[in-house]
Image (tube, rainbow, N blue to C red; front, side, top):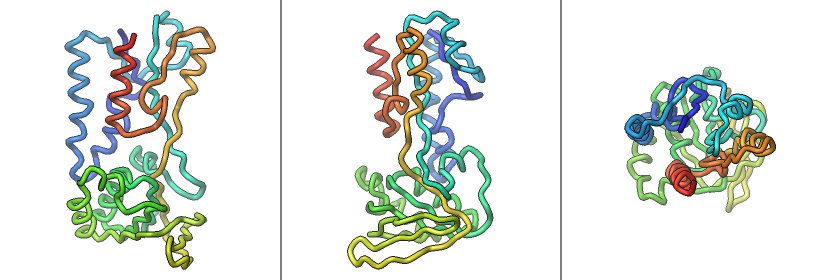
Amino acid sequence: MTLLEARDGLGGQITRTATLPVLSSLNDLWQWRANELDVLGVEVQLGVTADADTIVALQPDFVLVATGARPASPEHTIAIDDWLDGTPIPDGNVLLVDEEGSRKGCGPAEALALAGRHVTLIPDGIAPLQEIAENHAERPVFKRLHEAGVMILSDVIVQSIAPGAVTIVGRYDGVERTLKAPVVLHAGRHIANDALCLELTERGIDARPVGDARSPRRWEDAIHDGYLTGASI
């Protein structure tokens, strides 16, 4: 078995998220699995161009495509994923639109606030930290955000986004207002990167998408999906 990794290291989104405050332990999610690859004798190739031609040349019996997902951020915003990847953002205050209520939104909000930015977290049609609340972990997160100075809105829906501005409306009172800041970040849903899998299938390769490449979801669900697919071969 061969693992082709287009990046220079393993871990994907997890390694980037692990750079945020108090989330370094997330590295355990991939480091343990990387060690297991050594134990099991899996060949790992890093920094390669894992395109269809490269894969077809290996004449594989099966291909599991774990190419992840890409952000589906609206115009006039910077995706959190891109910021974590090193995309620079302008100086000044930050509006962070959050569609999920997960670590993807609150982690960057805390990091930027600790770096001296004034950050407003805008949950779009959801409760603040909604996904984290499902795991009953929201209290310490709210505490850290408050201590860092993050302003958290509630009961609002994003109506529109323009350069440097987010227009919101209250879910219950219907009051509309526009917030302005030099930076508008977006923590939201993703689209599966399934183009490689489709191309391999068209070329007669038994290719199967796993994890976010099949359907964007939580890390634990993506990992479990990969395990089930591998066990089925």
